Amino acid sequence: MAGEPAKAASRAGSTTGASSTSTVEGALAALPGPRAEESGFELLWQQVVAEIGRARSIDLICHICPDGDALGSSLAAALALRALGKQVRVSFGDDPQIVPESLAFLPGQELIVPASDVPDVPELVLCFDVAAQSRLGLLHDKAFAAPVLVVFDHHASNPGFGTHQLIDPTAPATAVLVDELLRRLGVELDQALATCLYTGVATDTGSFKYRATTPATHELAGRLLATGIRHDLISRQLWDTSSFGYLKVLAGALDRAVYEPEAAGGLGLVWTWVPYQDLALFSVTVEEIEGLIDILRRPAEAEVALVLKQDPDGTLRGSSRSKGAVDVAAACTELGGGGHVFAAGFSVREDVAAVVERFRGALRPHN
Ligand SMILES: [Mn+2]
Image (cartoon, rainbow, N blue to C red; front, side, top):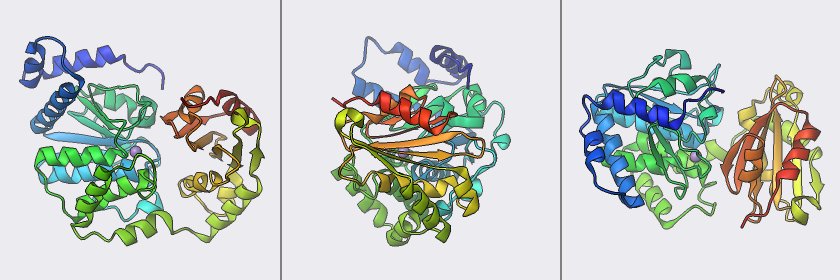
């Protein structure tokens, strides 16, 4: 992922590309003096809605190895924009593209196309839940070739790429930003949209358990349930359904778990790893073991949990969680990844012992 265009360069590209038609750009340039952050965000929203209004064809991109928030957000936005008469494509930069079995119920999947079907220079790209440029995967260059690249995200670690950044670290899910987009586009919630958004919010709040869940999150959930969606079936698909093989992989991972009481400044670390051979033996995909970290982080003895999942090429994908006293985003950033303060990840090609050593060494208290 080298050679990412500088922010200034992509901004300049945007201005050039939009100068002939844009009134919003002109209005922004004419505004006197510095703006308060909030009104800047409001203007950004208006600008994004104007770009969407102008566009004929819109490409919606979520992060590689998409989860419920990434896919739910993209599909909800795509369904809404299609209803407004736009030509839409949803894509993510994996080859092959795999929609996790647990998300197979999401409506709008007929809109998903392979990364190769996204134009080399898209007219307008909206990306969802993409915490860093590298998470665009194979679609990185195409996304940056677009004159307008809008980032909808809620990761505090997002470096702010693209031409327009609707990034709200206080939002518990990107789906919350999509709900706001639909409101601004005047699209009413129906069951398909609500299923996508509910999946996004429920996924990223751990079924409304995590700290980022607010009264507004429940208010949104209430509006989504009011459309008549079967939230019980969605929840069963998301959390309570697996193959028998998953149980066997889980058994191996738990058997391999290590507890290090002295790690994280004496607060304790529990870690394990899943060799690719286990996944192959029991026909389990790496997506299916996404929830393993939620079991590893249970022990009261440890503040931090880490799961390393091995890809066929030997790459280790790390997922980590903290209970509040340690900033795992900082540790994961040191390993080339990122995420939230208490939930973060990375991807490295090193052996297990070396990766755990580096992770342990990067753990710092959260202030
Ligand atoms: Mn998310």
